[in-house]
Image (cartoon, rainbow, N blue to C red; front, side, top):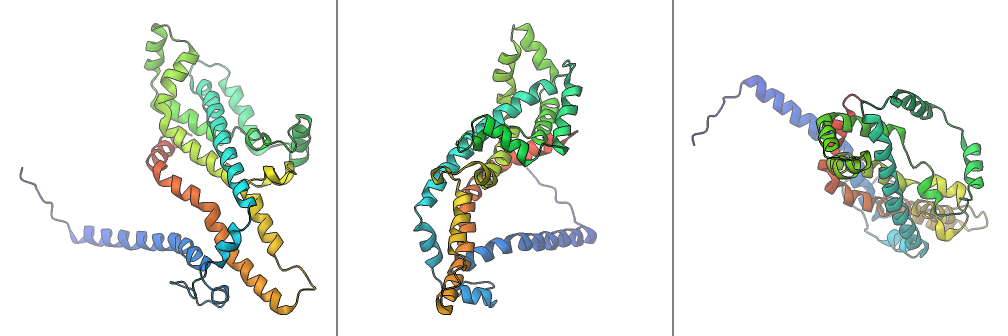
Length: 297
C-alpha cells in the first residue's frame, strides 16, 4: 500500500523543535535531582558538601548503605510498612468504591446532602487532640490497626471515583442488570468493580504512596518499636546519628557528621525504591483513570 507523505512547513518544524527543546529541558530539571541523590549517596560526603559532585560520583563509597542496613530495625520497618500499605490500600479502595457508587447513581435522592457533608470535611476537621481522644476511646492506641483504619476514606478520591463511574459506566447497564434480576450489591461486585480497574489503579497509587510515606500516625499513636513503620525508623536512625554529643572530640564529630550526610541520601533511595519499581507497571491505568475521573470533578 502506497503511503502518502505530507510535506511539513517551516513553521511546523520550528514548532516541533521548540517542543523538543522545552520538553528536554523539563526532563532534565525533573530527573537531575533524582540522579544527584543517587550519585551523592555513593560519593565522599566531603566532596558532596564542597560541590565537587555534579555529574559523576567522587571517591565512591558504600559506607552509608552499609551503615543503614546494619540496623535490623530497618527490616522490621519494611515488614510493617508493607503490611500497612497492602492492608490499608485494600481497605481504602473498597470503602472509596463503596461510597462513590451510590453517589454516582442518578436516582439516589440524598446524594446532594451527603456530598455537602463530605465536602465540609475537606476543609474543616476536629484537629489532632479530638482525633487522638477518639483513637484512644476506640482502643487503637499502640495498635497496628490505627495505621490502616484512621483516614480510611479520602473525600477527594471519592469525588474522582464518582466522576469516573458517572462518565464511563452507562445507565443502560444498570437497567439491563435490573431486568435480569440483579440487586445493587450484585451489580456493584459483578459489573461496577470489573469496569473500574483504571480508577482503582489510581486509588491504589494515591493511597499506597500515602501509606508508604506515612510516619505521623506512627509518631503520635504508636509506642512499640516493633510496630513502627519504615519512615519512623529511618527518622530514628538519622536522629541517633546526628551530632549532638558535646563531649565528642572534633575529629569524631566531623566523621560522624560526614556519615550522617551520606546516610541522608542513602535513606531517600532505600525508602523510595518500592514506589519507583511499582509506578511504571501502573502508569497506563493511572493516566487513563485520572483523565476520566477528573472530568466534571
